[in-house]
Image (tube, rainbow, N blue to C red; front, side, top):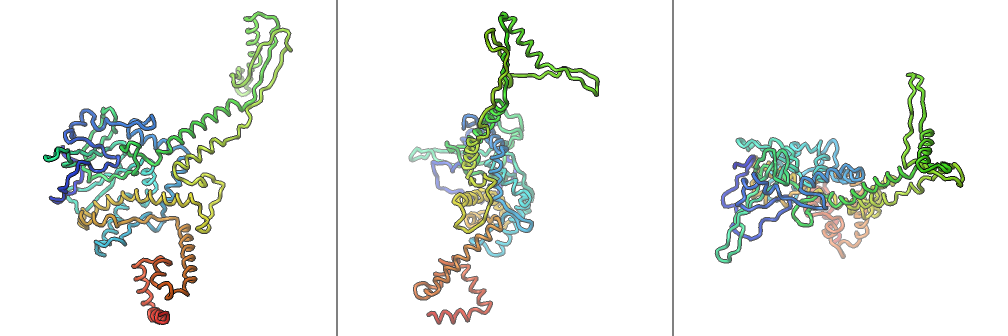
Length: 509
């Protein structure tokens, strides 16, 4: 069966001749099958589609897992924590894009090639609609734990690059890896001969039973951009989202809140106890008399002056309200007493505990749960440890999410002949992405750091040339890199400060 979509042609001989008995690392998003199974194997019987998991005793397959995450995101407390994470990760303004590419560490490309890469990266952001949809895209990736895009390319004219990016529901697509093994002639060990990867798409989604009613399409791996959370379940087989460890906390919180509401409704009202004196009446007659008394008190005829109707406004009572009890002769006669409502109904310490537990499970500082607490930006030494940990967590999320740009940009550059696939592999590790941050907070933090460095420099100025060199001071105190030092020296010379600096150095010497 022919594969649909883009396929990047590789040069012959690119495949390594080195063999291994271990298949390529599975990130949890890949379903591995034998070469002999093929497309026809699972198209008729379900095969790979029929594989399922069981986590937390309720999730049967990957589609159910995504549905569970989306349901959790609707819980107000969980939604607030997610919004904190997304807002910290994605920040934008009217002038700049939420993310930019950084090529400072790339040495394999010329300046003109770097400029083309930057231009194509802007095109990628435009194809994604990232300026307007950055918040939604990032939230979807965080909640689902996976993100799929179809790269729309004109196969007859690939030099124009990617013409569109279509998001794909993760519940309708699977990545398949066919592993072809053969026995080594000398050792008899099965080694990996070849691996083929592709995607399977079904517009009706995948059922664990294999009874899929929709159309199944086999797609080239080059035509799909796939980014996951990078987290795996305890069996290291299935990708889980960042909400997975909060699943139990969310369920406990919802259950406890429901129980609290039921308890307050049942215990809050005051209830009356009617002791009705039935004398020496027989049991059947006593019960009849008790019902007659109930009816006389519970029925009320109401006259409507607008319509002229007379209706029976019956007040239906239940066991949560009043009690009617018979009392035999010799008692204290008919009596009405009142049962007080529940006490201490305002205590919600257990609710607050599980709310804090939910925030901890999502790595969000507890202080952000307390809306009454004002946010104050002080010195760096006054920032809480939880905020520092949260900032590092956000940085890790950004790095994982940035793999989305890597794959799309790679395809765009190769199709437009800006770089080759070999050059991209050499430079990929040196390409990074700079996300915008909260401008005011970053500005204040950088200003304080610079102020502390300058103060330290003033204290060490008298020891320059005696115990420390100027180069050491610039590298270790001012934290300037070699490139920054060279650029600053050029700027100083251009301003006419070179002669003064030389005279200063001669005097120090």
